[in-house]
Image 1 (cartoon, rainbow, N blue to C red):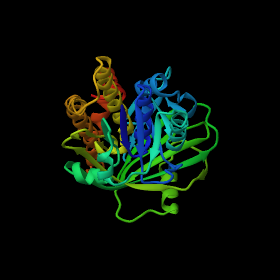
Image 2: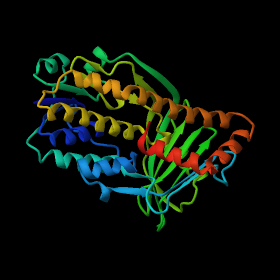
Image 3: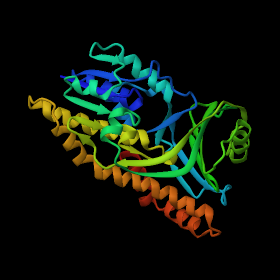
Image 4: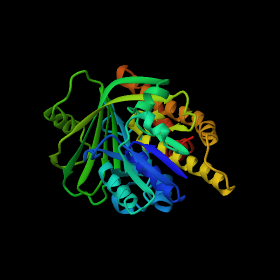
Length: 358
């Protein structure tokens, strides 16, 4: 049985690694000759998804950095955190560089005879192939424009600026910091004892230059003795949820399926949970001796759509809550968050929500 994956991003490569373990032949289709990742980009992976990666896909322990504490501030309360999550015994989540994860996934795929990288771009040519399942992870592909343009979307009128800072060694550099500034959230996410990733999601019309970024980082720098601020990149911030997940045997996936604000680092985690579900649905079919067919797409939508929408909405509510706090002259919201954050039951609920989703 042969499956097609459109796109060669991290979700596509991860999914391909899962599918070849089921002895499925996989064609990975991309219009690009070489998809190199920006070295300034990082992503967060929850503990449960790290366990899944290590046990079911490939071991990534050597290329991730464990975060054991999270401290959250606002512009008005920059000296005292309004929320704090601690877990000194083990990680709450981990940070990994996009380019290092891409390299790791590609290395394993290139060893498999079941994987073929192809450059078929015309959707009619793809449909002519005898694929049991076509999984579209590319929001810009022709198939997306043809079958998957109906979504619920939101423009945050913001851009995310990402960079890596080099700093003096911090032996226990395992605390992530997030400050909800008046212009948007800025996160400091450690990736080693001497390097930390910075993601600044700013509501601004004009493009920020390197000098602007350096001033902002220095202004909100929580603890670091900075030696160097590396080149930055930026991308527009939007959210979207697809109204229908499939068309015949074509299943939408990854960012095409759902895209969320990066403030909680949950985008890739949502896709990993989708991969787990799709993997289980395929196993149910093949274990009964049945072929993969369109019913998998239908079952996937039935089991994931509502959960994905609720999770996406929850992330958006968090963004809007702190966005409101930054725009009004009141400490009421801050005080409310502090009270909630000190409640151990609610604190644990937040942790489970971030780790396992809905």
